[in-house]
Length: 341
Image (cartoon, rainbow, N blue to C red; front, side, top):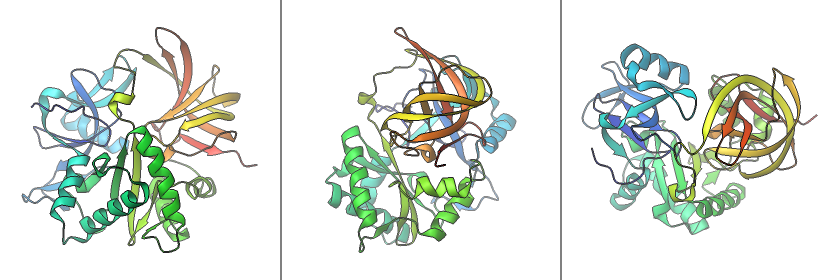
């Protein structure tokens, strides 16, 4: 299969076994794409595509890995550059790549009588009107992208390009705070519902969760339907290429520190430059940054704030330097919270 555009975060892949994966990150090895199983053919599945095929859905990392281990173990591999076991689809097994940009353009051009797609159109139009971001720099991912929606499905929107992302984030802040806006921040009930969903695989107390979530402009509601927004840099804005940097996994640790810089915090993957003040659990060298490929850790702490974080330490080596980082999202126990007391 020939697909000329780079395959990046937010895209979905369908393989020759009709498995559907969501792509992770912007950097991939030459022979496969790092992507995690999301939907699988299932005669008892509750999700039905237009072609009549039924699918089941897996969400937790543990369940995804278990399914592949039992049926397609070759899709789980050790990556020598990233230094960890990952899920990845061999490029010669890719049947189709789903583009969020193309899907949104199709919905906008065709219109829809479907309530979910109507909400997608309303959100995209509202954000574009407030931000003036080109519509071709927005996309819709998730179940809408691959035609596996349910009546209560949420909306996963992506904004592309660093400048567009920063403008879009500010515009969402304005929309969330407008009294008559169709795009609304979560109320207390909505926050509780989101917390109950996320705490299944990210253990964090509700007060810490709510403190950070209430000041973000990356999730909310439109016409009572959940919306989630991801901000992605363009591949041309990323200087690192596969193999330029090598990562070695070390032990897990809990640390305390201060955020020195948060300008990459809204993006997926997100990054915080930190001062590592104290190690609370485990052994840790001096850690200079925190990184996560999971959207829930975006915009979690702000510049000059003290924080407590728990995750896996990685040694990072390039031609010019060696340093250590804390990476979040691989385990339920990983967290990043503001130290408020």
